[in-house]
Image 1 (cartoon, one colour):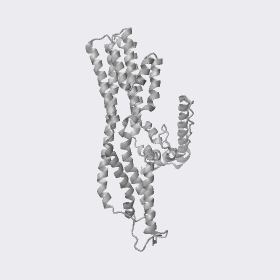
Image 2: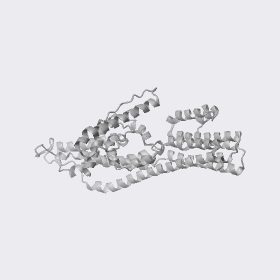
Image 3: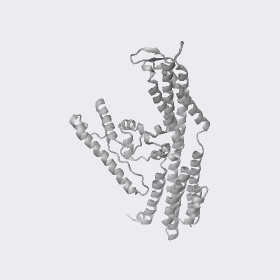
Length: 433
């Protein structure tokens, strides 16, 4: 079984490394259909290559792996680290806006996740974010090794030790004892754990708040459909309430995503104008508002005032709108208040100094290897994971650029509201058994 597992890994590496990959040209006039067709073709080429690899290379070996179903993660186009620019880390946050469905959970808990995660380590976004830090600590470890070769002693290829090339009469090793690092590592571990736990708490609270936004927006549309009378005037108000509810969540998404999202919001509002669901004056006023989410909530309250319904029913809808105000304020609180900077800076300084000095302690402990060269890979691996833990906390501390807000706005709220309105207007609920 172990041999078969290893062969599975070898197959995955071979197929993913040598499968043909096309490089799409990012021409601004290329249509989305053309890009989708090219992506399908690229995936088909990879699958065909893997099938041919199994048939021609693996089958003759008689190992019983012809029907292997290695998950190659074909739908995600990874970028090797040497092709990643300085802005790649920020851009790649969009790839973390995941919405899981049934097949995603099956893939997530698959035993092949270990192979998949190892194969993707070279194109990891965390790697790119840490490229400078890892390069610096690796250079320091190389410098420590070379420094001892020059000023202490070195070992030639035959295993004979010689004084350093620039060593004096009483040369001593340039190193540090391990004991201080043993004392400091528990404190560093606690700081890292607290940092990641605090960042995850912020992410989890943001996701919970957006769950509340989704449910409350659906309730506003549902209550409008239920309480507003069935006549042309109120049918128009139902449609308007649903439109303004959709505009509200998109305006909140725009606030949380920042100015780069302004063009997207403007296009979405003018699509509503073109569909006759919102006036151009209201769309322009929304874009010019200093607080666009609250402006949209005020529009929803104005629409509610135009409805000729019982005050108790109106109060229930207004309560739902008030809940949206509270949820908006909670989102603003998370976005505008980071983890205290004094804590983040202390951890970053502690971790940086610890890893910069660590090669001096590793050098003395790894004397069983030729010229202590293992100090370099050991330092790299330790730094990769310790810096990675801190980077995860940084990445999820501001959760709104990694949460799939577009899916929440367009699918969970706007599309569901349209479906509820369509069902009411179709009369399907009025049919007698």
